[in-house]
Amino acid sequence: MGLGAAGIAFAPYVKAADVLDEATLQSLPRANQGMPQPKYNEPVVYEGPDVIIRRIDEHTWEGNGHLMANETIYLIEGNERTILLDAGTKIDGLRKIVEGITSKPITLIATHVHPDHTGSAINDFEEIWINAGDEVNVPQFMADYKGKVNFLEDGQVFDLGGRRIEVIFTPGHTPGSATFFEMEGRKWGYSGDAFGSGNLLLTTNFSTLLATTTRIESYMKRHGIEKMYPGHYMGSNPETLQRISDLKKMSEEMIAGTRKGDVSDQGMMGLNGRIRDFGVNISYRDPAGLK
Ligand SMILES: [Zn+2]
Image 1 (spheres, protein in one colour):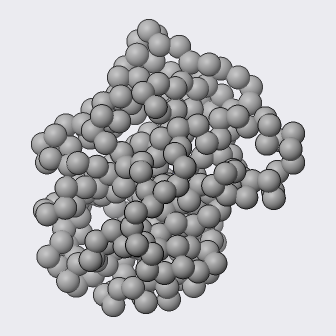
Image 2 (tube, helix red, strand yellow; image 1 turned 180 degrees about the horizontal axis):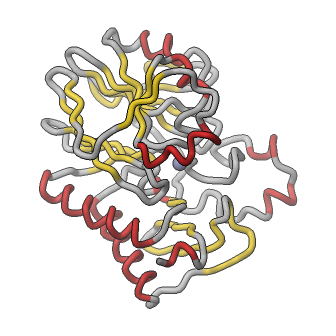
């Protein structure tokens, strides 16, 4: 889940007005904080009722649903296999759609277990890979899945043929969030909601986020990673090294008590605390998330 509570989507990216009454809408002032307006430069290669897919490069595509803040899927194609990273909220016929773009066998992997990433289309696939840390979310968000669930390992490498993708666990948004890095050539990764796409919903705590941002800051420097494509890609909001450093600093200060958040009783998903700085929003649980 990128933004918003319990399966509810928000304007202006989605049709919140169709599902929420005005009073409820007014009570959700935080919904799109930190998110830019969508504006894509990538050319469209497929447009259907549930998803628009755009070409990042010759062997990489991103697709946006429109039910939860442009929830994003990625297609990462090698010479022998293609990774489908996430499956959106409800994309009917997703398998057929992606098979129209890549001819390689598809491996479905989830950045994390949330309904806008492991939605109904996972049932198009016989297997899915998730981080076992998100098994806590399976009863709620993957209960209907009949296929085989495989567990990712931290440091695991998917060799797609001429293209290798490394798995790095990045807990914080959920206990089992994972980020995927290109190991040669392209200087980028794919981070799901681990760093929030501009609006981080921290369902664990700041110590977890501090550990994750410390590790990824180091990883990005070491490998010259320029950006990470997020789970709610709007065209202009890749996660950057600066963003990771900012999140790390905010985590340190929250743990130390030198930064204070706003606490309200209107939080989404029980995330009643909020801080905003450096153009990023973090919603967290107060006081449990302050550890
Ligand atoms: Zn999420």
